Image 1 (cartoon, helix red, strand yellow):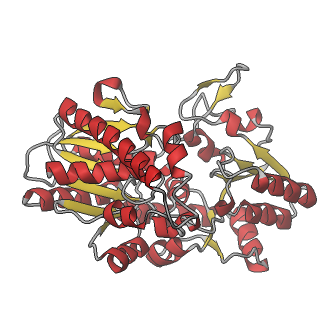
Image 2 (cartoon, one colour):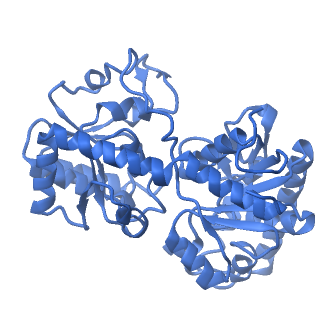
Length: 429
């Protein structure tokens, strides 16, 4: 076990809890990064969720904790869009809560958990019984807790009208002693203080900038050819899921206005769970624009391997080295993992100035092509200039990477997590 860093206390047994720790959603990715950092500080990490890809030796799978469990979905669909809930629904919530409390106690006892880290389950009410169960277990055990909040109910339109305002006040996020609240941006910090009178620390999403990014190797060198691109094509990467808030229509418009047959837009992730209307609109825009767009989600996975047709599966880290430009025209983000990835892989990026970017990232001095909801002539001209000027791209890459190290590296999260543990245990930092 590695020696502890920045903390005078003994190594702790830390339990992460969420609805799922599987795949590449933002909550799962950031929880894994925290675990890497905490293990490096000498702590042990354990996992509980409804869906898990952690080793069985350090995890406790509780299917009822998954937000898409049939029993959970049946209750959740009765809670929003209305202002009154029948007594029978209250009883259903309470019954699920009690079963989940049993699972939480089994997890705590099984791994002798000393610190709890609820991941987003006290923020967004996608699983109300789990949030209530977690709150009551913390209240009953007094276990030190670092509540990691990624997005709150008030940030999502579908949770505005609710029949569970009593539960939202009690557990989303709730107010208990020995709980350190952590948010991922300063806007959330201010809203949490204003709405709930709760102090919090900002720990932004981070990447391991201390470790150089992987590049081209014998496995991924053929990716361009495998997805049908030539060496001289301009590889423009949209590294996000296909959901409305990602603003992919702006990337399509940018490629259209570049008026260069070599410019190919490559979308790396699949469609989200928001229905088929958005991707249908994008396909219509692509047809009208008469540009070349490649959807390669079937060739990108969490690990290298082969698909059912015997074709290579690449990781996102295999895709980035091939990109000439990254587009990130999101309308809204809780933080911006894809922006950090572009900086980490030293790629120029076109970014829409969504609120969190404008407030927390842009003032730090990153060199980017910025747009404000519109692909203007200036944005197109800047993009052409950057693509044509290798020296400028390299200068931007070096400057941006240095800022990434300074503000969004593991070292930043390590210091702030050490401070949270010190607050909980009364230790020096």
